[in-house]
Image 1 (cartoon, one colour):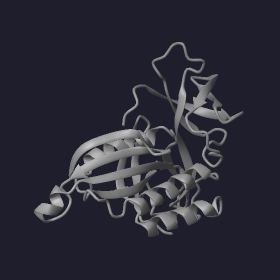
Image 2 (spheres, one colour):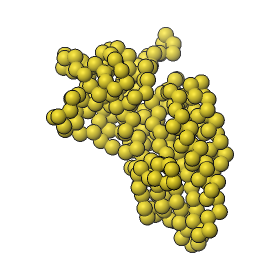
Image 3 (cartoon, one colour):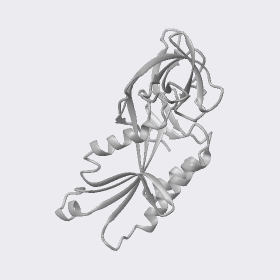
Image 4 (cartoon, helix red, strand yellow):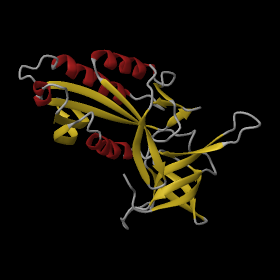
Length: 257
């Protein structure tokens, strides 16, 4: 995905979840923060941030805060500190996920239907996709696959170890429980349809060598993720190529439960 107009700024403070004070061209400017998470390890006074300028003159805030440069201290006296560019726009992962689904033909060979924000029963999932073409035999390739997918963006990392969530998420636990329940209900579909469920974690940065649920922050999420995997829910973890104005799913990252 690509943002239209992006400008740099220097972070000053964040009085609440929704706004921040950022110095833009020497002026203290109130901007909207596109992430209601805590992000305390990212938004530190003086750090460099990137702002999107929406094409809406009626807005109360002229910019959206979408990315931040995180300085990682050197691990030894001989080493140098490094800077990681992290996209922290909580709306971006779903846009990237749509691109990811369409481009990964090895996972979704012949997409016949794709819809975001799909309602099923009492639940609403980020994506629902129907596809054919998986398998080796003619019968396997003709079988219809129906898959529900949830998407989670990850901005928390320690020494290259990405973790989710950065705050307790009962909603995240609910999603995992619902995905596992669908597989239990649809395990033997009468019409021969193959039902699948998956959760896609998008690490909104490069440089992470593994991913884990953040059990120190929310143990129940880690338990739900393991239970979902045991029930057959597929877990996908990808890092992202990040520039000030783009975000793209890149390579798989090992999952550690």
